Amino acid sequence: MTPGELDLTAKLRFARAAVFAQLTGLPDLVRAHLTSGPGAPALTTDREPPDTAVTRDVLDLARSSYQEPLLGHCIRTWLWADLLAGRAGIKPDEELLYVACLLHDIALTDRHRPPPEAACFAVHAGEVARTTLAELGAKPSCADEVAQAIALHMNIHVPTDEGLEAHLLHAGAHLDVAGTRAGELPRQTIRDVVAKHPRDGFPDCFATLMRRESAERPNSRAALLWRLGMRLPLHHNPLDR
Image (cartoon, rainbow, N blue to C red):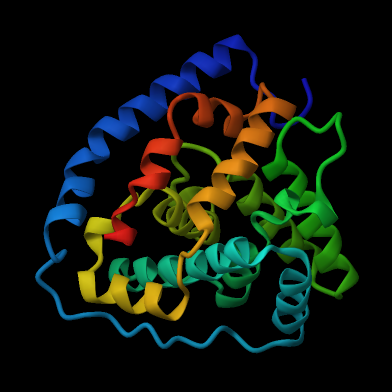
């Protein structure tokens, strides 16, 4: 099979894990919708990204490639990932995490869309990131870690033993799309992030892209998640409360 393509057995396993994750995550989503989050002071959200030649070049690429709603999603993904890392006491490589967050949806852009034979946009995005980082002079090991993190981000779970950056990218992206783990953050922190990087147009933009992925790559993780009802948490995300 092409990398990222699910056969019938893998689809059944993936669907079972997705449904179980949705059910077990319901209490957190209810808490995020109905309460002000954990009884902790708001977290500082005026974080500055790591400032290196690579991060500056990657940000330029992101700005020139993404639609505005998708660029905002990638930046918020980094902020959520950084905030969740702080709460959990996780210390990732800041440059790798930032780059992975900015590039994780690069294959959803017109400029970097996968060819028809590609089975998964996330796997293709990982390869785009790997090539980009190699051209920017990043170490091969760093490019490999970013590519792996991006390829994994459409999984249902990404444990820390897959890499801290992969774990946090997954957490940040799923929080911004579906509100997963939103109940772990103080409501004021969420308001501050969304005020600085508004979600205007993002749910509709992302829904359009996922419908396209589902039609073009029907055996991918994105397609299966879409058919399992991704549109519901996307359009009822507690971040928009």
